[in-house]
Image (cartoon, rainbow, N blue to C red; front, side):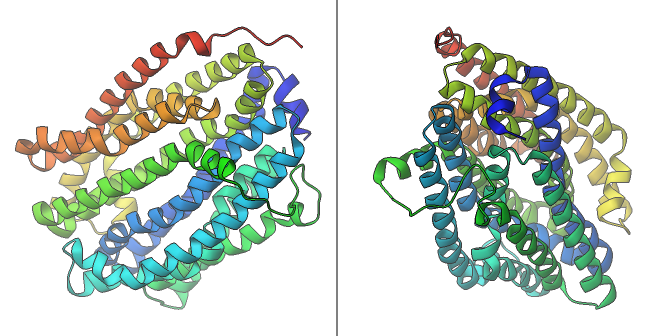
Length: 448
């Protein structure tokens, strides 16, 4: 589909269904490999391996977050440049960003491989528990240079109008990763390293396919001779910082949570926390996909001065995010036992009781989570990285750490309530941000 016509002329509601629904399905499919990973590891390798996976996962996500910084950070200025008809500048940002992601993957992957044993021991893990976590993390570290670019190229495909292609590619990635993981764990009997190898193999194959339109010159964006300069790099880092800070701050919080959980409840508490994260890993991609897939359209129209169209698109985004989140509240609150058994097949009475209680408290998160999520995406799309970063870091780190202290007397119950409390505080902060920027966001359209 011609992205210029799609972004500038399609009615906002129709645009939402054309871009946002496939985007949500696409992000869900790309995130499902983590859910499949957890299910297969829990079913085939047991509770200790499942806990080890959850212990290593924050570092795996940190590994991808640097690429996400550049990928998302470049997508926003590329969209704005296209709206301003600056094709040469858009192509240069695209080319430089791809090179930056590969370079970052080499550096961070090397560091994580070398530091894996220390990082896992630092979290309090010992023996087989620690060894399994190190094995899992090191496979991701080795493949970092060729896997971390997958989420960035997904953004570039959508900017170029390959919305359905992006969706089908993400579905293919999940299916490939799932099939390979079943083969490696269920048939060949590989250890936890086989789970990571399956996922990384699926990502590499799909990343190669994703770049075909760009290599063959069939996409709106094209590779060119890269021209790095300070202003462009600062712009990429500024626009990508909200997502990056969210990922990093969120992983720091996860590491802190895991350290506390290991001491308060051992492997069982870590496993329950993992179940909550996998449940979130099903809902958050839907929210992220809906909001993120509209960012190219919002950025394009913001760059073109069509501010009323920006507001109409965002209205659809906020409404859909709220409906989805309230549906998530109902599903998690009504089916906690079924969700638990999906990840821990032979869950004992203690594990089941802890998980059911935790999931019901956790479900309250989505009563308000949608509002801060949509606001952060809105701010990023219109080149307001500072308020987006404030919401991001507050949601992922500041509010959770504050509530750990406030809710500490409640023990594990306080940990499970932390998510809902953070969501409420983030919603209030987002309302304040929108109020302060109300005048700028309601500016009249630029007349052509």
